[in-house]
Image 1 (tube, rainbow, N blue to C red):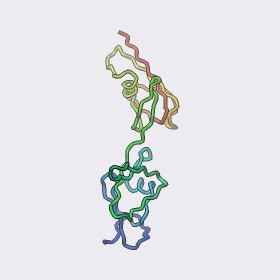
Image 2: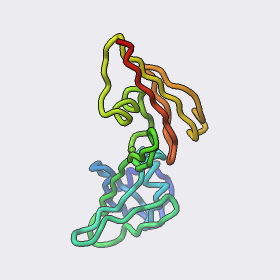
Image 3: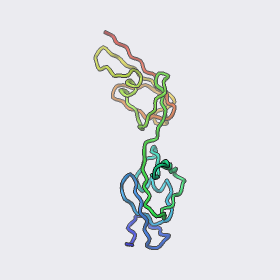
Image 4: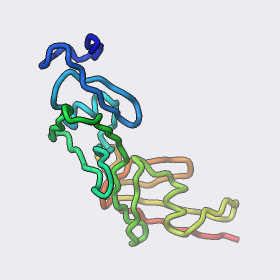
Length: 162
């Protein structure tokens, strides 16, 4: 095999380089094991995404938390992928699955009322609570986005002043 071109200077197995993919991109690793945290760094995966090891059907793909080690010295190349963590947000008392890091004013209105009516006589308000440290509570206005977290609460009103 060729010399290790990996940016990680540590080498357990001399010149032995093990291959893996992260979100479809090929990487080389010069250790027998890799942790979820190392996969996250190598593949530039955000903390709000989950990492999975692709597993052949009929088995389900395996979640790889940051502290889990995966043996890369198995016969086939390991394929890892990430996807956004799903949280539940509560809008006007109704739970909704949400996978994005943020939610916009308009998205809250659509979840609350099924649509956003853009006309001068329609007035919407959005208040939220139990949010993350970036925005624990407050009000939103048109065009604004806030960070979300699991079980965050939104209260929206719509008034047509026509």
